Length: 493
Ligand code: BES
Ligand code: MN
Ligand code: ZN
Image (cartoon, rainbow, N blue to C red; front, side, top):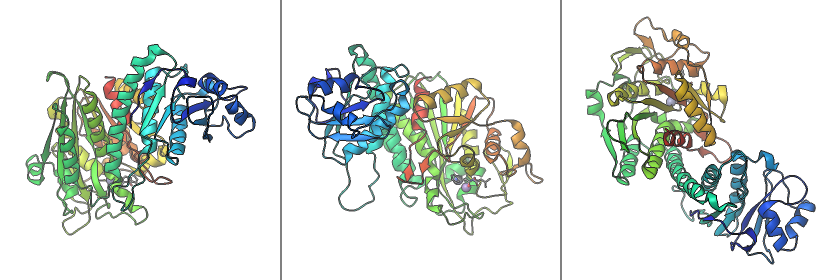
């Protein structure tokens, strides 16, 4: 999809469809009023008659506009003008593009952010518009036969009222497009079933990403190398599966080697049956999404590769299946992690923390500035914050503030949850250094404490995306989160 930025007057701008905001209160405002004047007050009448409304979510297509340079108008309810923030822009544009998808319209112009709003600068107004439009046209149909439901909308112009905002808006387009491209990659990887999206598939995708930029390189470790590194925790998870594991390392070099990198670790369980601690059948298909941490990290690397910021980033992805079989790990088995610490595996379904343990240990060799890990780690996190937020665990105040801010700005929000040492007390084991599970309460914080035992003094944050990585209702599928949050964070370092 193309996103040109336009500065012309609304009434004289040629377009197949002008997307116009309708705000609460008497009379039309801004660009909507200008178009209304040129077409003899038709739009005002439609609002008066109640056919069009300011209510968020409402939308009316006006198929013919005489007197205006726009062939059609799409009136989109935007609520109170004073409350029109990034979230509302996103909702309004998703509504608008959703409506246009069902028509044959190939090109449209958005006036939703034509008037500059208090809380939204030109850069973010444009970035959020691009990101919203792209997410509204996303579909996953590569595995459906027959005609694909490709949307015909291939160009969305973003109209702005101030010429002086042109540069910032254009920057919003390129950042928004890169974030959307990364998000789409994460969504595709998440949506692919486990018989397609295997650990080797993730490795191939990482390689093809790196091929697109000179300063990105990929190294993939197979079973024998993983053994050589003594990644006993990771190996204990993969040992029941026939599908071979991969440990994927992606390096992006945008700054001199003397700059400490940010290391991103993504959980890449391509299918989580629970292992011998087998999961129940309902919704088990959704455990194909258990590699969404890996997908989010790869999507972020794609966005970074496209935008080329002057930083260094390393992505680490332990990828394998968690299967039950004659060779699978048994509850009670004790393994030695790469860090040297021994772990009593009391529940083979708490596998994400085991593969991440070795990835976090491996991260040390890069002497990172920050370590972030991203994982669909606990059902407890979903119980705590639902699907709205990613759970954020960190003891570093500066890193926490940066991540929370990035989440808010990119409409991919995280919520801070407790990361006190005390949550680790119940990981006590009589037979090993500690166990892989603790008590029943505060399961997401216990998991975070387990991970913390594999991180030294490096500022570190753990993102639990168990609730935010996919939706099970309505348009079921992967969301691509937290690509927007991570990319915004990295761009603002
Ligand atoms: N991948 C799951 C977590 C999960 C479950 C994410 C449901 C999203 C939806 C993880 O590997 C897991 O099974 N965690 C266990 C941990 C428990 C055994 C301590 C859980 O949350 O039940
Ligand atoms: Mn599990
Ligand atoms: Zn899992």
